Length: 230
Image 1 (cartoon, rainbow, N blue to C red):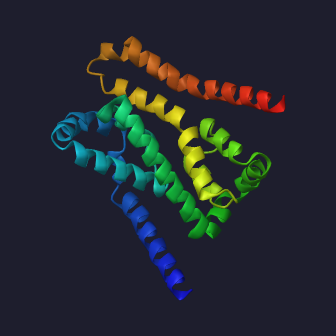
Image 2 (cartoon, helix red, strand yellow):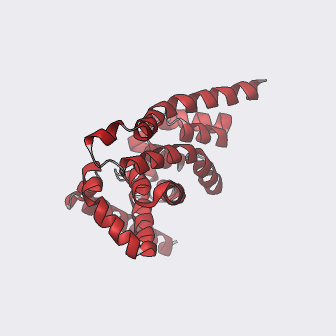
């Protein structure tokens, strides 16, 4: 019992120090679109000579950012497409985002329960009702059409009765479509070398899909709901 309490205290301290360091040293400045564009050539050169290490570093950074609920996941997703292309980018982002989300979920369940309840208490009732009513399908809906921010879903779900394994696989599947859309946008963003390229059909199509995705996802959910009620 004492050992468990000590481990929890150490973990809490490590997480707190990591979050403070992120903002204290303004590390968020490296997770911006401007930085991605300015460093893109250098990153690609490094990737060409150290592919395995680049993959590992990117994966660990993504897991850390999502696991600690830090801002920057969207830019990292676009970066995945820009640096690794559609296939590798989607693969890396899909697993890194789901693992990071699960770590945040576990931290909320076993370490930050009181803090999460005090900050997101007003949303927890609705989420608990959804889980009790629809189970894993409710989480799938939230992943496909996020009614709440990504990090809030991770933390709030940690306070529900949903199993960790269920949270993981539903999140992996539910976030895959959105991951594909954002990574694809990142691959096109990487090709902008002039003002005229901004109006290229591929880039315009990618960002049109980015804007239409929430509407398409809502339509899919509506169709599934209709099938369930029949």
